[in-house]
Length: 553
Image (cartoon, rainbow, N blue to C red):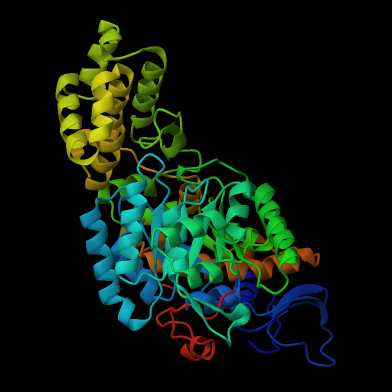
């Protein structure tokens, strides 16, 4: 293209899409045009604005990429029940992205097998990956077993979610990876990296600061940490990265990203000023990330990296049924609603789910009202009991309770004892059976219970579908998880250049100002070419191999 002015829409798009070269918008002969090099002297062309080169691999924080040993400041967040399973994590890790295994809600043996496979296939190669650790206030043993598995298989990054307070096992994971390193900043080497997912400033501050002394002292007293680790823990924040989660699928406070992300970044900066010798904790953005424009917006608001969720659930590698993926691929931006959560049903906590193609939200809402208005199953009006058994549970209440009691006897005998003496708690356990099974029916594609499928989903899914309509990525069968990541980032790099020009007062026609996805029937592979890890020399120079955290931030 060189210095030949391109004034047609196709030509202007070609210049904009050449992300490794600058884009000069010029006026030549009274007509606007574009070229990749400065106009030749005497050509009569006047430069109106310039957009700098913007490779997808340079979006976001270089420190995030170095710290995690990845090519892109992009993460696929965990999806519970193994929906972000081993296949998804391995595909993204091999393509140079960070992904988190969705351990929440899985039995211990399933988590153990997954982490064993990830360690075997990725650990020896130095490729980065994470495992989710979800706060379980109703059953702290779940946290303990997950941390045990992570330490057993050498998982070097944990994504901590839903924490409203720091817990002993979360702190135990963090301090277990601290080593004294005289040449490192602060004299501390961090081996166990921690990414905290939060939606409130007060929770973010917990992770911006070191572990509380009382928790450290308790771990030392119980022999779960040594005195040196406790001392080193006072010199590092609890998290290396904090992901602010806006309006997302599943558990969500439905926060507005544009409002809250700058608040979290400002909080981080205030805490950083108190400790000028530490590198600031990086802040990422999650929730609503489903188009290139949303990626650009998050980075412009101060995010060091972006985290996707709902859009990955409809990819080939996601651990859910193909029927659910087809439902998700047909969802619009408004096809989400809130419904009672299985894990915190009695507290009235809700999750965001797909409304299109399922009546789960209506059934779950009815269960919530019954729990609110009645003291036990025996007090339900006959019409309500009949509707419950015939339309919602589709089996007698007595059978559901027996199945639930058998499960509680094996896993939570203390809960069973309470349910046997507390009719309202027993009712909650029966209702929880439906709420819990609904997500399993979805992931397994149980056709007879399709109307009851619980599919966690945020509005990003609908936005992604609108963006990919009419392209190769409209077909769920073409949505490789690395291809989705690559097109989001390449599109974001393209739109960041368009944004630069708009801020300079240049108006571009829509025909050349929108990133173009591959047309139907063509290859939708990752356009970023992320087939290798980050430059090994960078990780080695930082004091470790790719995927191993270097000195403490």
